[in-house]
Length: 172
Image 1 (cartoon, rainbow, N blue to C red):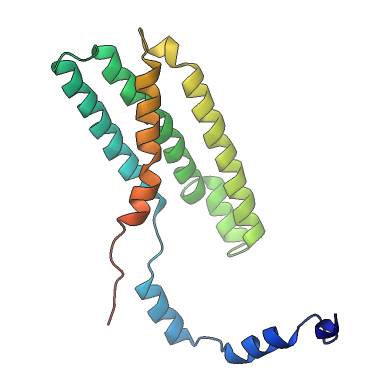
Image 2 (image 1 turned 30 degrees about the vertical axis):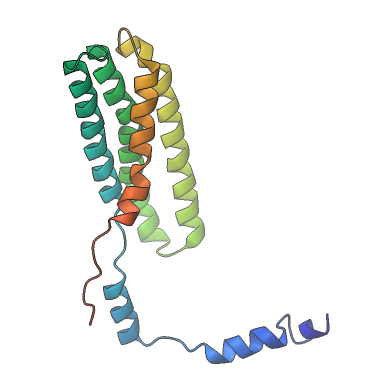
């Protein structure tokens, strides 16, 4: 506890604090140019593309004699169980009246951002569960395996959107 006698900062952290210097405005601009902010809409676009791809592959399987048309509908609906809630959350976090109000009232306040994220994540989860629960109502002869396959394939788009991101602007 001897290291915390100076207001909670131990000797190792004090040395690190001396080495850390604040960035100038120009350095911040250059850093932001090299590290563009990711767009949540890119993830939604990848999800839509993977939903179409998965349903297309299921359609090829139906054409080859594996499964029926309900398999294609099940795979597509499984993808939609990810796409629609994600799009609702993306809209809520970026374009909704609540998001605009929070940006105006508390710009850059972490608590406001976290509470907005928690709210929309809850909406996303509930919408996903409601869609999964109502799947048998919407798709006659539902293939649960096809629905889960579409769901899992589209859920993996988060990793794909992160791995295949645009190159940073202004590198040099």
